[in-house]
Length: 84
Image (cartoon, rainbow, N blue to C red; front, side, top):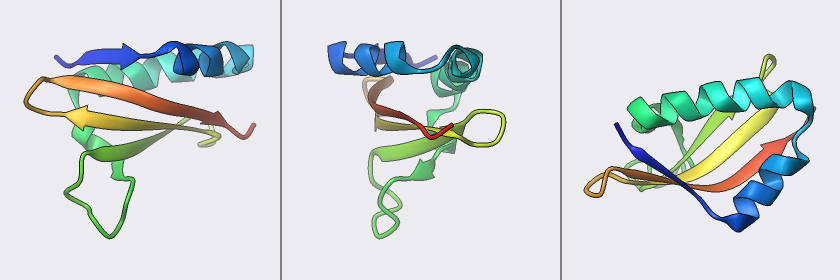
């Protein structure tokens, strides 16, 4: 399991999500806890880099940008976006 790290700015972004996005976001966090490298590389020019993006939501309306620290087994959520 990986430890999820969410700072105050991310928690504020989370509070701004609509109610209907919260269950999808929780499901995405569950994925990040067990298989964070399954997201797509944030920088396509550096696919082996530590930053990733995971799309979530019923129609892919949301995206989580995160930093994977493999050695520490941590996932640092950097940004939550919702376009729905």
